[in-house]
Each structure stands twice: as C-alpha cells, then as structure tokens.
Image 1 (spheres, rainbow over the protein chains, first blue to last red):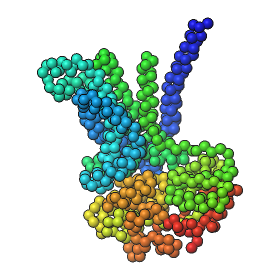
Image 2: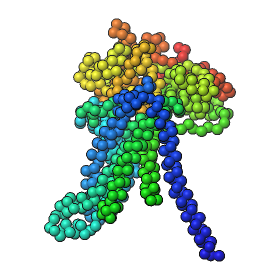
Image 3: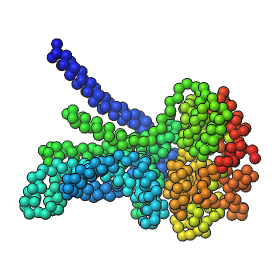
Image 4: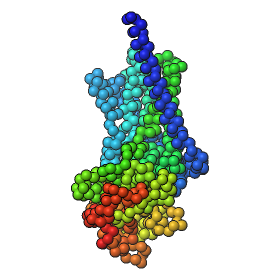
Length: 297
Length: 294
C-alpha cells in the first residue's frame, strides 16, 4: 500500500510541476502572439518610409519611430557607460578588497537599491538631478537625455554589481594565490588576473543592466522631457529625448482600440521587444559559452 | 535540450517584462448599468471642477456616488465609447473619427458645454517678457523664434513646454494658437517641444527654469508663474487672462469645456447634468474657470 501511493503522489507532483513549468512558456508565447497580432498591422497600414521617418506625431499620422529608437539607444548606452566603471569597481571592492564585515553590510545594501521604486527615482531626478544638470552644465532645460542616463545608471548599478560580484566570486582562489606568489601586488593580481578571468561574467552583468535600463519607463518619462527630436547633434545629451517606453506609456491611455495609432504603439512594443530580446540573447550566449569552457568565468 | 528551451523562454519572458512594464490602462470592468453610481472621467483641465461639482452634488444627494478621474480628454472619450464611464469630460469637441468609433459601438454621443476655460501662456517670474502676440507665440512653438532676445527678452534659449498629446489643451492650443485658427494650416509643434505628463510637470519646470515657456488652463496657473498678456496682432491691445476678460471676449485664447454622455442621459446622470448646468455654475468661478452665463 505504502510504496505505490508514494509513487502516485510523486507522479502527481511531478506532473503538476511540469504543467506549471510549461504553462509559463505557454503564457510567454501567448503574450508574444498578442503583441504580434496587435502590432504587425502597422507595418501594412503605415508606409515604411513614414514608420522609420524622423517625425513622431501620431495626432497627424506621422509615425516616425527613428527618434524614439535613437532616444532609447542614447539614454541606455550613456547609462551603461556611466554604470559600467562604477559597477565593476564596486564589485571589485566588495569582493576583493573590503574586509568581511564591510562586505556583509554592502552586499545587502546594494541589493536593496534594486528595490527602490522607479517613480521615486524619477521624482528624485526631477527635483535634484535636473536642476543640477541645467545649472552646472549649461543645458537650456534640466530634463535631458543625460538626466535620464544618470537615473538609469543608478538603476542598473545593483544588477551590474551583484552579477559582476558573482562572476568575480567564481574565479578560483588558486588564480589569486598564483598571482600573489608570482610577486604581483594585490592590485596587479586583481586587474591583470581576476578581472580578465571574470570577463564574460562581467559582460553578462552589463547586458543584464542594459536590459533593465532600456525597458525602464516611469523614471525616464519623468526626467527626459519627452521631446521626440532626432538626437543626432553633438549636444544631444544636454537636450530632451523621448524613449520608446515613455511613448507607449503616455500614449496608450488615449488611443482608440484598433486605430492606426494603437497598432503603431504595439509596433514600437515589437521593436522594443526585439531589441531587449537581442540584448538578453547576447547576455545568454556569453553565459552558454562560459559553460562550454568548463566552469571558468 | 529542455534546459535550452527553458533558457530561451526565460529570455522571451524577461524581454516581455521589460517591454510592457507599465503603460496599459485597460478599461475598468464595470458590471451592469449605473444604478446610483456615476462614473465621470476625462480632461485633466476639467478634473478639479468636476470633482468640486461631484462633491457638492453628493452632499445634496447622499444616495448618489460620483467618481471622478482625469487622464485626458481622449482617455475619457475613449472610455465613454467603450462603455466604461457614464460621463466623459472633454476640453475639446469630439473628433469625427471618435464619433465614428462611437457609432460603430452603437452609441450616439450627446454634447453638453458646461463651462468656459481660458488658456494662459506662462513663463518664469524672472523673465522680463510680459506680452506677446498670437503670431509670436505661434513662431515660438514652431521653432522659428528660438531665443528670448528675439522678442525683447534676455539672450537665453527658449525651452518649449507642452502638455501630452492626449490632453485637450494640447489640441486646442495647436489649432487656435500655433495654427492661428486656420483650417488649412499644417504647422506642428516643434520637435524640440518637451511633452510634460501633467499640469504639475509644467508648473514645476516653469518655476525652476528661467528659459521655459508653457501654457495651461487658467484654473491651473499658480501664483509663482507669470502669465503673459496676449494680443490678436501687434495693433491690438494686450489682454491678461481673467474671468472678466474671458467673459467679455477680449482675451483671445478661450474655449468651451464639455461633458459627453453615451446617448440621451437617463435617471441620475440626467439629474446630475441638469444640476451642473443650473446651480452647479455657481462653483465655476471659484476654480478659475468661467461660468456659461455671467
């Protein structure tokens, strides 16, 4: 009696877990199909020249997504350029240099940073960072691409630090011992041995941080000024921009379902999805690569 | 193989999360017809007035519940078309395509002008410019004039502020100021225009930034913004917006505000609208708007 019933219970639990696991995949596919169904019509309703034009002005059927794509790209790339050195340096400090008690305090604190709601950061950016950018950098307004990038860098930091820290953690102790035994200083060991050995993990960290940054909406909407201008001039960092996410968020509330504008917003969603997917794919491929190389990150 | 699949689906999933973290305001499901509850949604310009009306009316008629939300004229009209609200507030007339969409849903919208509003053009209090013509404002917002020095101010770049395109104030300003009311005009806001998600966003930036110029409903202008006197043309007289100057027609930028219902209003909705158009008018001036009758 005992054994078969245990088996049956085990079978049931296993089946349940499988169903739940596969339903997660199923939901994702359904969402993806929904996104395609709502967004693809725009590619036939609006000419490609218009769709990839330089003017986003849906009230008058101008659906140029180029300023939005470039706006997102500018803000995200700048954010990563700011967050990468800070994040890697913090990870190196936490993992390699900080005394044990400092590390015990810092790690959870950094992870808590990830939990700050983005609207709070947006408010912080509006009231403190924006006036700073305007007054000290001479921008006409404080609501600029740079302000957005600073806030996004702050948001991407916790991701970058914790993933990079894990990567450093996975470098075998023997590497450090060997470096120090060869007569290298602690700094030389960290910079020439440990960080290069953890390189692919750090790349993953950056990719994940980037994925977080490009999809962020609320904070960016509050601090970038939302002007759909082409960010192609040299001073674009000190000018307002409009990102894809902010466009979807602000305009989705007003559109009539099934209108061209509605489809265009889902079209922007598809473009954003494809970009995020590619970034995640790049992050994952570095992770897969490192597995094939046998444990060394 | 399976783990590969899981990894890919995880990728898809996280990408999707990034892609649609915010932004969809689905229609709030509301069961059945309006018995004692009235849903009222739309124009942010009208939201404070609509709230004041609703509160006063609920004190007189405790059995009726009126909930008022903002979101923009387009949002309110879309909700009325989709049947999720009883009354849509709008600071503009319904567009022909919105009326078409309503008819496609079997709804013939009824229009009620409920008050008048003036749009005031505002700048930072430290800005020496205090009067402009409509033509000058149009040139500023289309990007022809880019420096305050060109119109008698200091040598500073002009930062353009506007409401989001789902705001009725935006459409009104575009048609009557930027295009100067000309139907054949195709002028648009300059792409440099900052689109602010709320009235508060505009007033915050005006307060802080001496370069900025913005516009908003008269009811929303706070004491720390400087309103400009406006003239039809250089020969005309410059008039500051006020309840009097709107009522006597001398202030150039004013407009009616509307409430829309899905078809002939019945029961409580009809009683409420009658009250708004009658006794309710006494609340209008207190909120910075202009009543229908002096």
